Image 1 (cartoon, protein in one colour):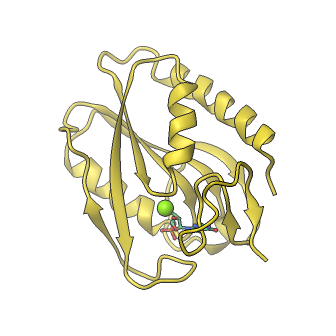
Image 2 (cartoon, helix red, strand yellow; image 1 turned 60 degrees about the vertical axis):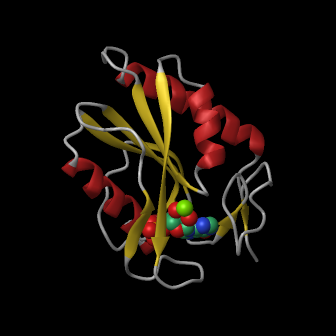
Length: 167
Ligand code: IMP
Ligand code: MG
């Protein structure tokens, strides 16, 4: 669906765009990758920034298995440092129903950060259940389950350099 070359180009564009938006902040940006799927995107995005940034992780667990985040999401691992007064950029692999990003963004906002934004490599609007604002989007994709570049099916295929639709 999306070649590694296209991904790389787009991630570098996003890195430049993000660096411009945060050019004047006084503390390092806090990049928060959602485990595990967003780690590959976050690693590339981090290296395409031209501003200082820290790297943190959150782990979301959704009740139920399969190919969607069936209903409820809980935060299984929270960021280690304090977010109060910090500029926070949540990094997600794909926004599907919107529940994962929405749950984490709500939790972050309660911690009184200076700002919170969302970067998503992929936006699949067809299955959205909750409205979430994506501040930086890599690609909008059609209603197909995708794998590769960190995204998995049953724990597999994260190592693929491009993004593929699962058939
Ligand atoms: P949401 O909470 O429904 O927006 O789903 C977001 C999470 O579900 C992402 O962080 C992914 O881990 C997972 N997910 C959703 N769609 C896909 C897909 O097509 N491939 C792999 N993982 C997916
Ligand atoms: Mg995920």
